[in-house]
Amino acid sequence: VQLQAFGGGLAQAGDSPRLSCASSGGPSSNNAMAWFRQAPGKEREFVAAIRWNGGDTSYLDSVKGRFTVSRDKSKNTLYLQMDSLKPEDAALYYCARSRGHVIRSNLRSSLAYADWGQGTQVTVSS
Image (tube, rainbow, N blue to C red; front, side, top):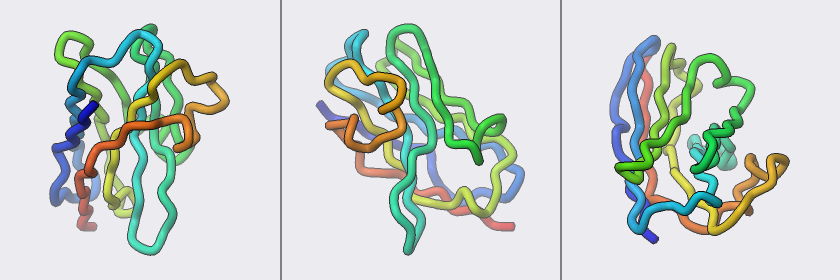
């Protein structure tokens, strides 16, 4: 399984960039996929997750209402639409995929995800 994230770059506060994560091999209906991020000097944190089948989602409180996670099954691609971008959203964003079912309480845990992309940098100017 290979995950390739792209769509990052330099944005201004208030912008609405969209990150994409292409998945080789096609996730199965059991999989969950997620976005995590890591800012310099900080630990990696959960951002958003979605079940490949059914679309059940989960969000970090600070991005709820601003970010939207979605997937296109026909393209095996995960998206993160980031609206009302804030300087504190600046980080290296990773996409990740589970290898099986993930119970809802574990969707936010990095341990639930076995496959990770290389990350795409989002820089925000105020």
